[in-house]
Image (cartoon, rainbow, N blue to C red; front, side):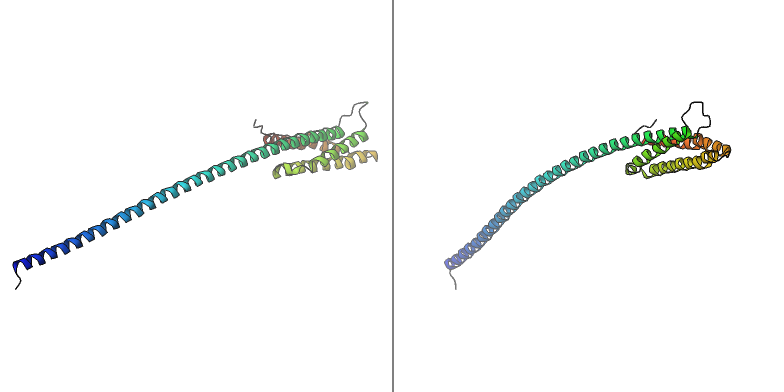
Length: 215
């Protein structure tokens, strides 16, 4: 049988082993926790650094994009301004040539011919020359006009040419051949001073709007 001293020694040894085991577990747990905290701290630091880098890169890219958009907008504004200036120039020249053509045609087909007036054959030539000048210019500039406006312009041109030819063959040549041609003359005169003049007025209003005149 174990003596009291032996029991005490065994008990003491058992307690010592238990305490040692507990101390070792606590030590391991503490070290493990410290390692976890250290790893977490390092990870958090790297994560924050990475976030900061991404934010800085993002801000740089955004600033580049803003700069590019600003440059693009400025270039577009300059191009649009130049296009508007060119369109205004084309409209002004086209309309000036068209008005001159209309005036020459109206002078050619007028009914009242005072004494000493320019001969009809010369007025015919002036109208024909005015049309050639007008057509030579505007047909090469249609790209600067909206399609609807260009179509109206070509329709007016067609009516002017048609009227000119009708007067040459239906009035002037008829009279030169000894005919009358008065009824046809009156029809042409009324057309020039009626529907053609009205069409020119509508076209003028449209051209004004194209260059920014809203009145």
